[in-house]
Picture 1 (tube, rainbow, N blue to C red):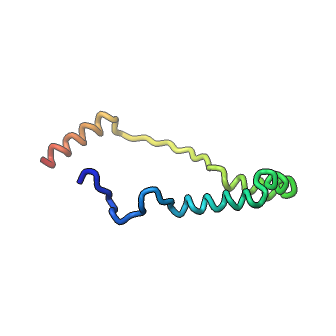
Picture 2 (picture 1 turned 90 degrees about the horizontal axis):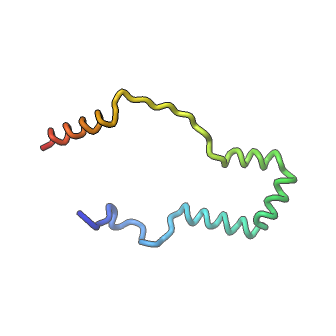
Picture 3 (picture 1 turned 60 degrees about the vertical axis):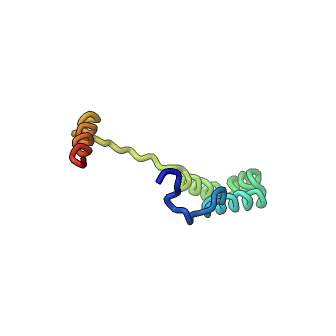
Length: 87
């Protein structure tokens, strides 16, 4: 049905999800503990731990090679055939 939600009893519009609340709590705590200045001071005193933490937070690079025997045209033609079969 057009215009209706998949979950009418879901989270109210404008309310924040748990991740957003958690993120905001971390930011507030970070600022309360001294923010960037305090982090830099800690990093100088704990360089090994700091770099270990940074390495865990950085996104990992993944190299993937994907190949297929079908072209886009092949896939579109197959989809068209499937749609014809459904009618």
